[in-house]
Length: 325
Ligand code: NAP
Ligand code: GDD
Image 1 (cartoon, helix red, strand yellow):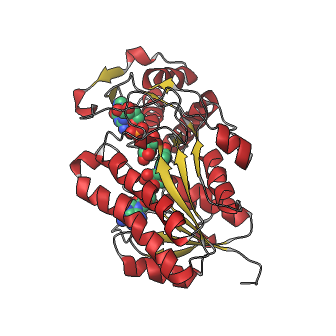
Image 2: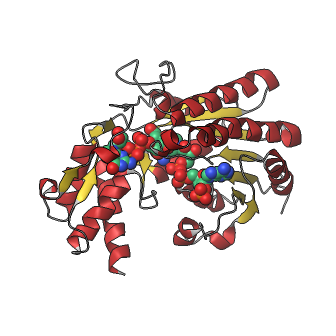
């Protein structure tokens, strides 16, 4: 590695955001290290699909294991650390609340400790979330809106968020928190509603599936494209001072209207295929999220580029391609 090559460590590199962020950083000339937990099956399909698997250095490690995080910091000699690893599915967090707290909450503190111990000059990014706003306390949520999490996942992420602020204030670390609203892509996990819908639409269009079963279709989300959102993560670590930023589109759309768009893209009417199934309802719901990204626009110069219509079309087309292959 030359003296000028910057090194980045990404936890959760095998996830949706990890893959897009790794591609972005490789494009900027970074040496990219990815921490990934040991699994019994291969989890690198996203890195493969983006054609970057050979370009990244994989490190075995887990946010539940501090020594592996210290080792990852030593091995990567990271100048920038992006903590994206998480049990990120809200629905599962009611089934596994302690694991979610340990990985998403305490795990962030372990990663901050590893940074503090090995190289406290490294710039740290925490993957915070609009789920922290939960039962919203303002019509448009920004950096000053109080949190009211509605799931064990949201609770764990509030802990990680405040830990990030606290390491900044206690240890003078360059630790920033990106409060990202929902962002999707063809690489989205199939359990999340947008991908569940686009995969079903493609499958129904190809005659492989008859119906789509969903829970609450009246909830609304501020949906953007993951490829746009990883740019905001990088911009945060480049700032002279660390801070917190809301990253969102400023537009909210219901699950129902998202479905309508996806089915219409292949010339179908969603009402002919959608079945409401109470199995997919949540014990406590986040009814609506709508972000105000004014600070990210003003200070980072960040803007989203992908409207929901384009995003949904991109996802349906990718699922059609995969299922036809
Ligand atoms: P994702 O696709 O679910 O990826 C999560 C990653 O974390 C996966 O690589 C996963 O590996 C890894 N991971 C799980 N448990 C781990 C552990 N114990 N130790 C280390 N890594 C672990 O999530 P994403 O959509 O890319 O989101 C990235 C981050 O942003 C997450 O922290 C998420 O909570 C947060 N976030 C996401 C959104 C969104 O809309 N996408 C919005 C706001 C915040 P395996 O696949 O092997 O389990
Ligand atoms: N997953 C899922 N499956 N959601 C459904 C379904 C279904 O069958 N039917 C309705 N929904 C509703 C959920 O109840 C929720 O209101 C909405 O669709 C979105 O659900 P998800 O796509 O699972 O995302 P999320 O908003 O709960 O969480 C995502 O965004 C957060 C940021 O706000 C995740 O990516 C989190 O990790 C992230 O922090």
